[in-house]
Length: 257
View (cartoon, helix red, strand yellow):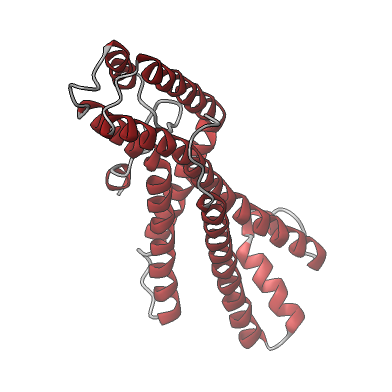
């Protein structure tokens, strides 16, 4: 597909997605932990005791089994920070790959639109386009083979954290900060799921657009190769999938909710 029109907006889009998601995750994680540490400092009025209570209360499953030490608490906190960024990176990675595949499918879609609008009846041109679609289908298959597990993990993590937040909301609290954090946290995770569905689902949306353009080919441009392409597109859809348990579409965000 080297002869297709190239857009340089993809690189900017990738940078924007990465910076926005990772920066938001860092700010959210930092504010939450800063608020917890500040509360313990105000309560104990001793910095060492505040750090101890902060680590012990935050990770009771660890410090209930081993003796507390500041170095161990710091190590656990760094591990938790790494886990947070790995969770965020899984979401970002799915969005970036979805954007890259969508870029290629959109190139193909514009090519089909051009052939249809110009009423080109050259069989070789339509055969070349059909060969390009075969490459796109193989690209999508290869992507799904390597990305399916990451997609499943991404959705499972997001659903898990939403359920955790909803469970925490059952506890009555008069703390305005905790209520605000709960609302913002649920909103943030919901936005992440929506972004995955939108950026990942754009592959399926572009594939649907290809079908629309092919079905509107004028009779002057219709030939045997165009018909073969239509059958190929209809029987071999393009979309990102979680091991074929589900397909990422924009409507998936409504099903998840």
